Length: 129
Image (cartoon, rainbow, N blue to C red; front, side):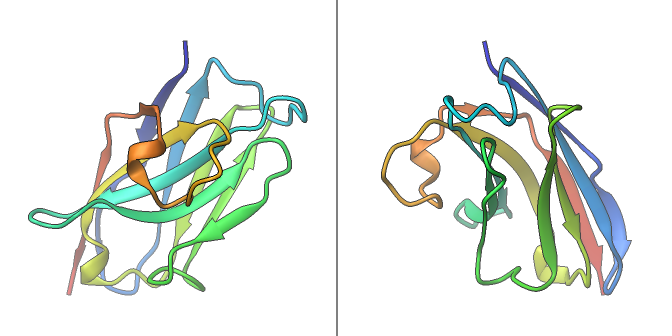
């Protein structure tokens, strides 16, 4: 059974940095025969869930949402079964609950939240101006 546990959220001033972690159990990172996508999403009150960044566990190929390109970096540590989201140059509009989620290959957009089968509980990020 796949489980994801996020951590690393907190409060920071605009321009600051945070690193989120998503510890994954029940999957083997770097397995070329079992491709999985792990992505970070975020949701602010009253807004739709937004895809932030994604990574493939077999080859570490990455994708990013337009609003975070150049500021956020997603990476994985195969030995620790952990996916990280390094967030730099944070803005107040980055304030949201951040979730990691995983799915198998679907052929659909990586940003389609409904295609992800397992989600973590979320970690709150608050950026003040």
